[in-house]
Amino acid sequence: MLYFTLPLAKASDSLHVNQRELAENARGQLTSSLGSLNSAYANAPYFKETSGLMEALFSLAYRNLFDYLQATIQQLVDYLSIETTIIVSSTLPIDHGLKSQAKVVAICEAIAADGYINPIGGVSLY
Image (cartoon, rainbow, N blue to C red):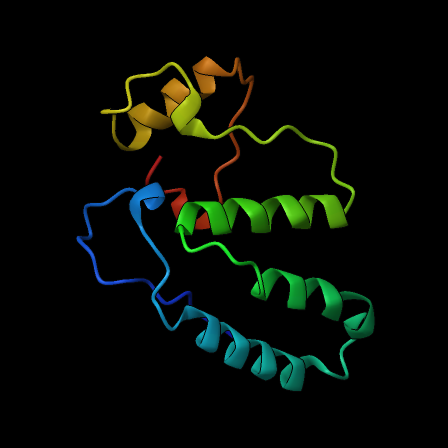
């Protein structure tokens, strides 16, 4: 398995994701990561079918972290033909000062969710 990171500009850890920027050298690091990804998975099933998508995702020109991540998610949803509505939680009419479980509950209530599926890593959190 190959991991890569998005290099972020130096800033306070207390900033929200929409206040963070990719580092000046992010393009170079993403290009390098794409090369590593291509090398590691060149013989994987469906590599040829998805390599163009990966190149497009790694080449997105957004500097703002949130914009980059949102565009990446939207392109993946479109590529996979997933029919869903993506809601940015900061646009919901909730108390955005809430934290942890209280915030998750408020979000679920705001969208009238009838269930919440927690990833295995978060089971002890919520």
